[in-house]
Length: 132
Image (spheres, helix red, strand yellow):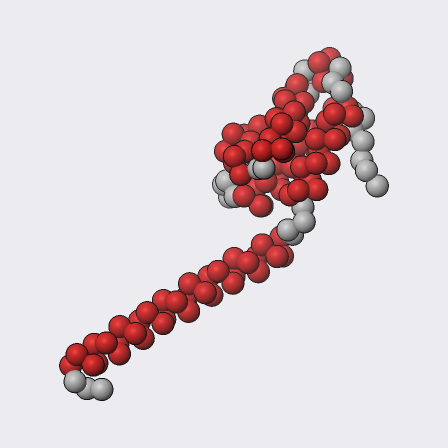
């Protein structure tokens, strides 16, 4: 079910959700910090595909305009909703669990490579000393 933006609060909620998805997917958020979409777009906007930068700019601009209620109510809610759905459909497929598993796999591979290099160095030293 597609969600349609109807009020200023919907736009703010959508922008916050997209900003949190960007933080979880691309990083750039400091611990305990909830950056706005505008700030996340400045920090990690280049990580988005080119076709999604326009919708991200549009949603960030709509969020910024919501600070002024009269201007916020005059926005094209359909365009904002389309931008939100385009961004969430791109950012959501890789969930938090799969990103955690990916990080754990990369850390494990780094540790295994380090142990392999240490073992190779130890064997080389033993061969040079003549103990092996």
